[in-house]
Length: 278
Image 1: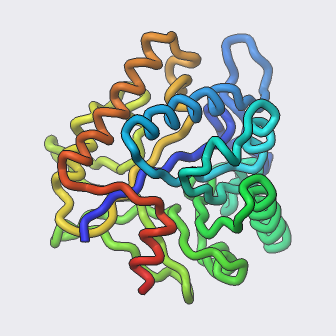
Image 2 (image 1 turned 60 degrees about the vertical axis):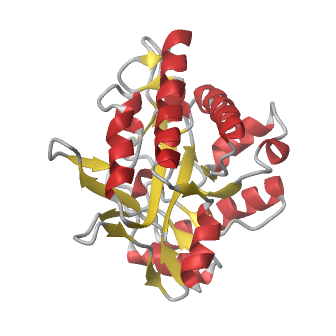
């Protein structure tokens, strides 16, 4: 089997870990105070959904709880994402392991975060989410074991290197649960590349780099990821002009079209996890 999944992390704008804080902040605009923003994430979400509708691609959206609350104020989020899978991405972009903030969640906080995130999605979308991606992709075995107890089918926080057989397959990380990893490989110049599109949005990689990743995989599931806000705002340039947003969307479309031309059919992660679990 040789398939793909397009995943979008829907979280606070240009999120950054803050030392000594469990809640992520947004990178400040020039002259702004430290704050949390969501407008770029919402606008990027709407633009990505338009692209997916035109291309008839079903995707998985990892939704942060706080961002969900903001989006719900201005749109019918259940209708908006009715054709796609919604999965859990924490509540306020918590650094579970404390790797970046020095503020790891204790067992009680971790359990509460998962319960709250899952319940927020259930209320908004009418079904139990079965997937999880850790904010910052910071995950540990303690969290994986807890995800199983709370009924999750899969996690998608880890990265797996394309092996000698040129395959990248999901694997069992805890009893009854699969890891649906992002892929790491070497580009045409021999440099490491991961199937997360943020370097492309930041102007550091071309769409062809990701299409070449797809061409290099003989079997397995290629999980492609991005942020919704990264279409309209970047770490390096801040809020983008309309022309730059159009360029960003064109690059995204080129990657998705390239995957299709390489023979990769897109599925949501839940469907792929169920197939691999059988």
